[in-house]
Image 1 (cartoon, rainbow, N blue to C red):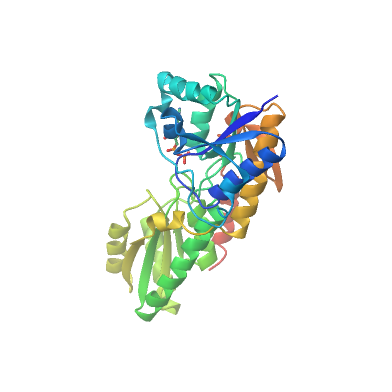
Image 2 (image 1 turned 135 degrees about the horizontal axis):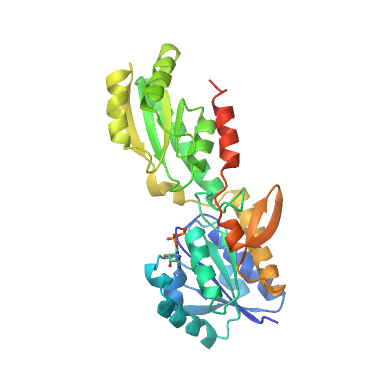
Amino acid sequence: MIRRIGVLTSGGDAPGMNAAIRAVTRSAIVKGLEVFGIHDGYLGMYENRIERLYRKSVSEKMRAGGTFLGTARLVEFDQAEVRQVALENLRNFNIEGLVVIGGDGSYRGGLALSKMGMPVVGVPGTIDNDIGGTDYTIGFDTAINTAVEAVDKLRDTSNSHRRCSIIEVMGRNRGDIAVWTAMAVGAEVCICKEFGFNLQEVIENVRRAAQSKRHAIIIVAENMVKVEELAQEISAHTPFEARATVLGHVQRGGSPTVRDRVFASVMGATAVEALLSGKDRHCVCYRDGKIVVMTFEEALVDDQTDLLEKFEIFKLLW
Ligand code: ADP
């Protein structure tokens, strides 16, 4: 029977991580456990920066963006010796189970740690929505709402000046932020890994928009094209002058939306339940409308079906 658990946030931060830490802490305390917060993810675990969390440690944290425990990237965590030091630190606190809140990289770290004997359960915290096993990751809703608000503002000025706005959004490996934002703002073009990129098609779409509108919007997922170069092409081959904007880390910040707070709360409490029922190397997922628990290996498989369905619909919305 587990009596003491640790919780950490790792990798890229996401709005809603605080609500997840709160849910882990509160639900574990209600079940009679002691909870320890690990600062700055695996880095703080390695450096032994661990503190006891109480009910009041997580008061007033839910509405704040970011993560009050801090997060970090520790590339060396793929080395067994580094993990061994981190594991000894957990053992010195008599920590017998760990909740990792983070993205796929953090899950890989958790998997490696659990193979050395520490039970680990993951909670999906990343704005990118890029964990295959789950239809939803904490932070995604806040990020897309931030992106849509920014694009709506750019559209106002774009329309006044007869411009084409090219907006690069985040999403390293998956186009979810780009696709959801593009649909929500009625963009002319969405460029992401799943939809592909064809310069000639983009130019034709923008030309078509120029026949009936004073502006055009192109949403681009990061790492797809150089947006400044694309702006030059659009300016040279369409009636619009094009301007590129990279939204960047603004998408990671802000007070979490209701959806992110509620998902974080449910998923955090579910992770504690999973640890208590003896689950290890598992993570909490939202799948087909239900909260479920599956193994890290299952969840780390990339699943793009949903995005491809959205592409078919996107093409109908002209
Ligand atoms: P995210 O969790 O948001 O995907 P990263 O990919 O940066 O973010 O991963 C977060 C951290 O997880 C890394 O800095 C590293 O400490 C750990 N990690 C990632 N991949 C591995 C791996 N294969 N083995 C061990 N630890 C890993």
